[in-house]
Image (cartoon, rainbow, N blue to C red; front, top):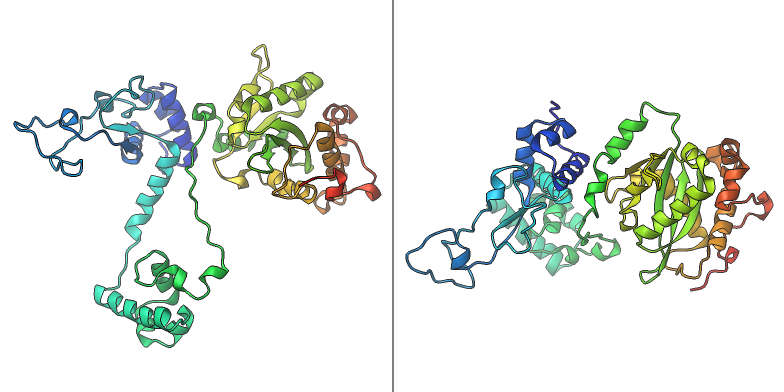
Length: 414
């Protein structure tokens, strides 16, 4: 058994296996981990959904009804489901969870990854500074920053107390974490820098599709097959209220990229466009699109269905990147820069037609790249797949002097 800790891909496969009713032994073989490791992972990194606090939901058999203060009773003990005593030890996949009034426990791969990180970091996050020194530092910061408007650097250089206690970076970190009376926004230069906060709830749509198709599975599949043709898939969006988006398909080896106009956030639209492409290319499709690495957005929720054709015969491998990690498909993301030359961020895509999308990518693929030894992606891709492929996807060669990467190419409108 591997001694390494579970990674995000392992947790994705574990959640997918639980949802598909795998046994504990099957999960152990799938993840190459011991059964006790899987048990500890589920119990320690699951999250709980509180039940209603009332005497009818309490496991204690009190002789007299207790007084609930603000909806809470200090002797309250929630019922625990019998399902927790055997695998999967959670309420995942339970048919009665919507009507059950007991305390619920769920396993979610994203939540488990974040919980694991917090548990690893928390024991190492502590202060060696005594309470007396912290109080003295706090008074020094209040006088210098809040009362006199000094910068932290100026105050640190001029204060022997701060220099003898800890470094300037530690004090700044304490202020940002809220350990001090002085708040971060009171620092003189705080508003000059952007401070990004992630308020979005991270979630994987239809996690079962990722079983055996995670980024680690992709890496293990292609590392011994350097001849395999790998394609990266992503989407480009405009305004929030747009109805259209562009499905981008990239061949990293030659930096070639083309696009298909789809309905925004529609998995059915993506699959329909790819099925249409398969019909046009016929047997050529399985020879060209051998391995397909897709983003994890909602528009790819049914992308795994494209591994087989309409008759159930295998035609191409499908894998998914890690959630919210653009670096897993860097070539695709890098090529989006050329799209933004023509369609800047913030502009609507609803005016686009497939003809305009083909025109845009024809100019982009006729653009000379230094990374291609001063050849265009079009030239290198034609050498590999031929003119028939280009005609099928609607991409044409543009004369080098006529290449245009301006908005005027497709006359975008705000």
